[in-house]
Image 1 (spheres, rainbow, N blue to C red):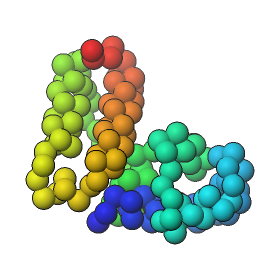
Image 2 (cartoon, rainbow, N blue to C red; image 1 turned 90 degrees about the vertical axis):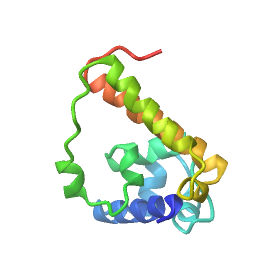
Image 3 (tube, rainbow, N blue to C red; image 1 turned 90 degrees about the horizontal axis):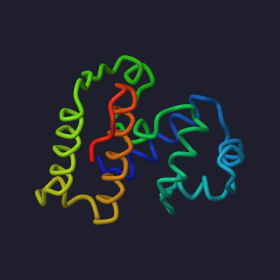
Image 4 (cartoon, rainbow, N blue to C red; image 1 turned 45 degrees about the vertical axis):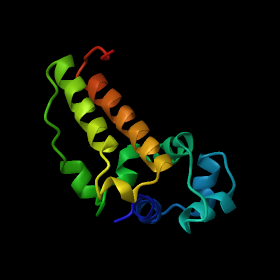
Length: 139
């Protein structure tokens, strides 16, 4: 499934599950209702900053907007293997970046802009994992 479509489907689904109108989300994100509507029909795609605002407004983690076959109960039961060392966190992050840099059939589906965006999401997820495990950032 295309990353943008997953995002759009999840945004609409989560917004509806939380019984928020487009107007309410727009207010919480300090943007226009028409912009939220354009996102939901795929006419526009939000910046990383706007995705963070949307996630905050919906009271979810930003990466949840990109999960294929999203289900609130699935997210509640996800078990993440604890990262016990900074080296493990760095290795996990490096593995993800090397995957995103591959030029195979799967990666060619994403445009260069979408690959950069995916890297930003991966960086934010890695930071969160490091912070949740009380580790120092890897440099």
